[in-house]
Image 1: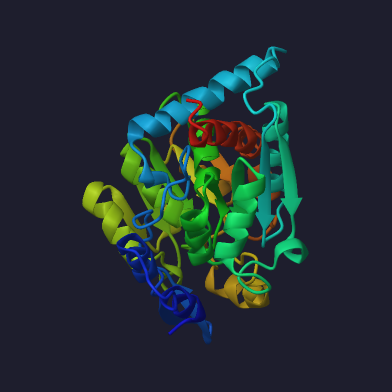
Image 2 (image 1 turned 180 degrees about the vertical axis):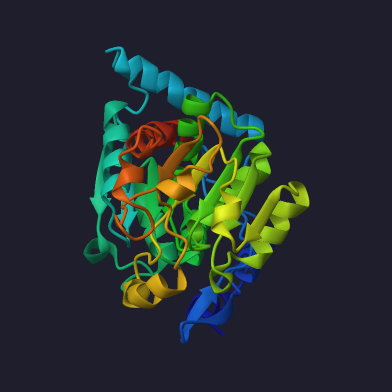
Length: 357
């Protein structure tokens, strides 16, 4: 039994909801590059106790399409107001938020901290040496301590089970800033960028080229909610979680996994990529470069996109590996608008979680 499951199962008495949460934590291990890797189940918020006030934001499809559109519309409204010079909107005045980082990130920290500040609040950064989540101190203890101090918690973690436990024991909203399983706030920023640039979400043809990682899990869940035509083009041994794929395809059959990136980008409105070796996988980088041969998004691949199609990357980019300078710097590249939209989209998420939408 994995340690995280053992910890969840060791509670003297589990409520029905927390029994469901414990079942979600059962994981299947596989083999990749000779190393044991974790394959997740299709996680949901089932069994996670809601906060006393507001909402958690753990997975994109925990909410309806209308609720997701409300977040995006509010994000765009606040962005346009601030860009016009009107910074009078201060709904977070007198409020505080803990930002728990097990994984470092420039974009996640700056976007959340600045966004919360712009709306009048104060965000507190907690790095790995400040909390030792799940190691120095039990995740459920950190949840209750942070909730006693703050009005909201954002967490950027490795294990998705830690996020679910954090939310389950927190009396205040918990926002998923990234886990090894998914990255919903990034996809809300991507959706905002697509809406700004393409004028729509529903029916958009989107192709992701690269590793079937946490980004793909979130992409599939976004495609499920907005009826996107979504293709993940990845090497066969780097396919996304099959449970998540099955769940999303059951709702939207226009979600697929293929291993031919050139064919996959044909006519795409959005071409998307990410690093081939994420944090914690850098020792596999050289081997992955060999196995991902042919998956670099270059000018020739982008030439196959639809007229008016755009290029997105969640950053940081390893130029010359998963994509090239000519693509990142092209007029059709919207990666820096996309990066800025992390802040605006997350403002929408925070307002939604605080019941201010």
